[in-house]
Length: 263
Image (cartoon, rainbow, N blue to C red; front, side):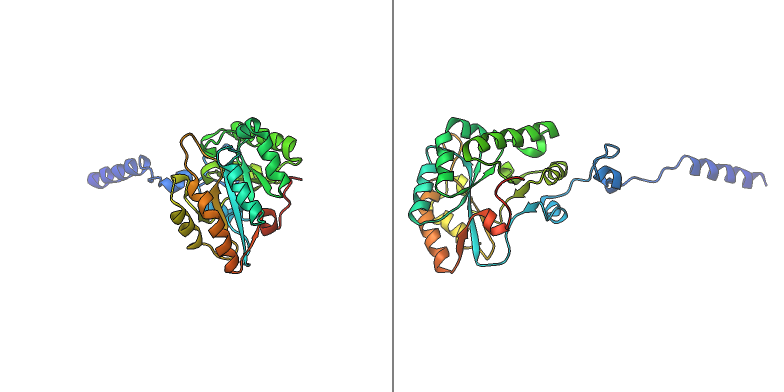
């Protein structure tokens, strides 16, 4: 009897002091309240692919599967490269989409005005090209709103479309963008031209991956020491080949059926 009593006490002590292991998923999985903006639990970190699925109405990487392709150029304006890209587009009567960095627009306002005057669309690419997911929400909002104000003064409208530097954004920022009626637009064809690739490499990266509804990422601006000659030299042949394949080259507002200006 005494042995049985001792065994019972051991079991009670064991059960009372035992805590089930908490998996990493339990820790990171947000409650419904936290997803809507509460600070009560840390949000699960979704991948960009998961964010695109969850926020499909706001986060775009491609258009409908029609014979249209959108050529887009980041990190503008840049007096070294932007005018050369514009010259090629003008020669071939192509309208494209340029994502503006606010600090560069302040330094080169005439280039922004030329982009708009020649019929191209402009979008918001932040003020000084930070990685959005590493910013506080207040800093993120300032990047977008300040750049939007700069673009409005130069282009005559506040862009609806935002392209995050490096394509990087988090869920809280996406929710804010959706509430403010912005669209986040990345790409599904990457020229990798920022690496200083040759004309043939840039051309192959684009033409080997393009398909109906593709959004092509190129650059018409860069940092110190950047070499975008590959993009400039490849662009005429890329345009010609896409047209030979039956593609219409359009701006992002045309492709996605979205207004270019924020409402």
